Length: 87
Image 1 (cartoon, rainbow, N blue to C red):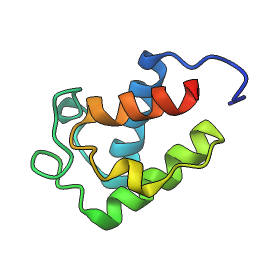
Image 2 (image 1 turned 60 degrees about the horizontal axis):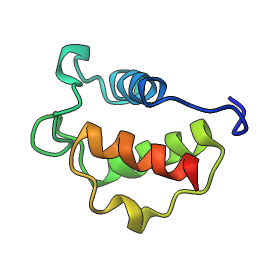
Image 3 (image 1 turned 180 degrees about the vertical axis):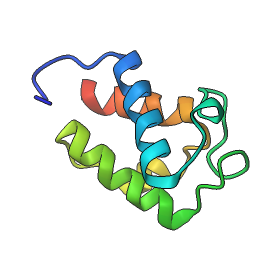
């Protein structure tokens, strides 16, 4: 996907959902904006690194792991990626 094209929040959410289902075998029904990565989806720190790597490929941008330390929910992930795409 070109970084020049605007990526909507809906596209980001869809990509995050697909990624969690494919990489971590999370049930699609569980991947809601309110779902908490660690508590609800069992995404551990190693999985989070894999998610950041996948999001880097998706956005074509470098993602600072420090920026993702405060991410707790799917909505936080979408917000972080959306902000990254605006910077």
